Image (cartoon, rainbow, N blue to C red; front, side):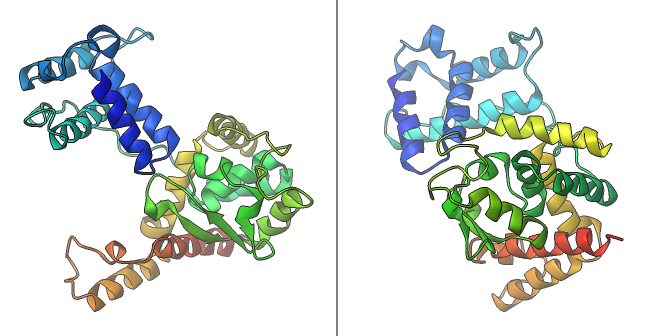
Length: 302
């Protein structure tokens, strides 16, 4: 279906991360059954057929002999709706055929996370190992960064004598930010970068050997086992960072107070759905949550 190819090109032109584009394309391939139905005219995709396609996707076992998870088929439906809106805007369809398709099932909320004491144990193990792998895992918590954001860092992204780490690209504009490194990590990061070209991957061994997010996932679980804490993913560490900073401990009040004050100065009521983060400069909220999370972890060390 050429329309899906055109939609994929539009996603890339919007600057979406390559991994996001690939995931969206995979969802559309499965939902629209492009291998089987891709030769049909786009106008064949009516609301009734869109509903049936979702039902087939939701109930058909995958190669692992089980039906797709709720998150998986609901994400596919979301991709279908986005594609439907695009096709409608282009004038190829009169309306989004997936607009009235009702998603089924309840999504899982978040990834498994660590508690405060468990996080300290994991970070102690990471710092003690002093390897590229362990420091990359530590960065997921320290900076609240995603796996792809960590492994995509180049040597040149470590700036100002190792004090700053620039995230130059992400899934959206809010992911582009500058993070302050900690004393625990600064010297190690500078050691990884010393004498290497600026475009070399920071956590790679050579100038072109860039690790993958799967590499980071494997080492994250390995280090959790060494620290004798529950095994979590890099995404779980990112969630731990936010939870500790904003919800689980008293120090999160400073972040909430800052957001509330900024919202009030912008003329919004305290319970307004439009928060200060809507107007905050990209990275400013992330910087506040990073400092709050580190204050808890470092302040609680004996």
